[in-house]
Image (cartoon, rainbow, N blue to C red; front, side, top):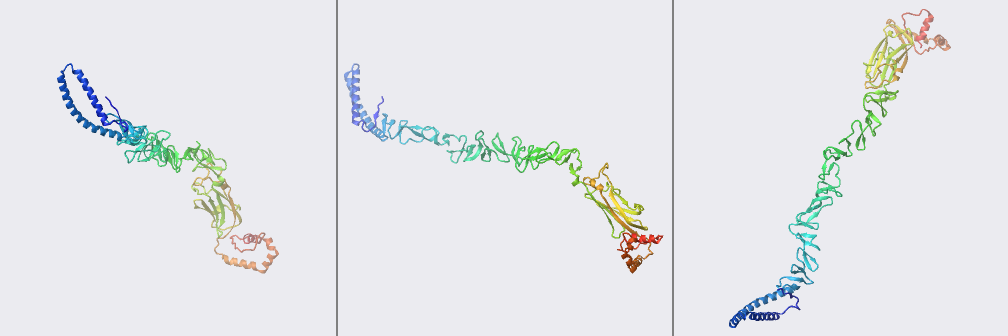
Length: 517
């Protein structure tokens, strides 16, 4: 039988009331027992038993009463001290708490104990993993030993996107790009593999995109360094295969190189093929800078099979060069030696030539205005003065020879229609202007082989002759000019001929033509 006792001070039963109630109950019980057994037992025996029972029961009851009195007083005081509104009859458990306390599992607390939270007038236990929670069993704000707090959840280990810290009960929330970290939110060990926070691990950082020289591996979500140090991005299967390059190189095929190969031009940071006719080009597929094969020549920025008029094919670079600026030119000059005994012909080219190919002995023609004189009267000496010039010396044969106003003309022979045109040693064509070169010189030769004549004495005598008064008068009257048309008395050069003139007139004419020219 359950008996509830009000625990408030104004309704608590007194000890005397309780004792009287118990004694009345005992008397009623004994009367009932006598009536029940009077038919089966004799009255004497019954009275004896009753006397014995009552005598001993009273002693027992007194002993029980002494102990229970103290227990009841203690428990009533405890119930009152804990401010319970209603207590169980054994005073150990409580049914309801007071307004200043909270009930939990037949106990009253103020405040609620650890691992519980206030729910109305009761204390409710947190999740078993929580040490502190608020409002509901979870979320937690502190975990029990053996658990770690990830945000508001206590678990045996850190949850995804949380990492361990120096405090074993607390996990740090990782950066949004990290799926795993430790100690710091940005000290990542793995990155988020899916959008919108997909990232790639480089060292201990998670990056949205990998920097230059690294590959973003979508399988491991890591930044893997490319093999080629100039790669900005590279293949996931072969890290030496580049997809893009840094500014110091250009991309060609799957490599980063310093310059585009032949047949390609730099287009931004890539190598783009030239036009099919081009071997080299710059800036665009065309114009070309070098043609694609040996059949074509580069003319300006186009490739042609043959060079037009005014240009020549320069095989060294497979170009059509403008002959007006690039063809080989030459100069032709004639001069007499200081002693008037040799005529020098000098021919010089603008570039080095191969004189084993150039027929320099017949490359020019020499003509003499006096038909009585031919080249056979001279010794011709050819001299190579450099790799681009040569000279021809005309020396009269050692015999008596006298010339006056003889014109020597030299011209370069025309080789424009030659089956094999001439080139310089480095492949430049001879200009057609070379074959139009001409030059001439007038040469007066007075020569004798008679060593018995003292030319100085003769020369002195002639000077004395012309210094005479009458000769001076003749000069003044102009007769001298009539006798010697075109002559001037500017020098006195002796001429001795083994065959003297037949008449005086011929002699004077001879003198006028040769001495006073």
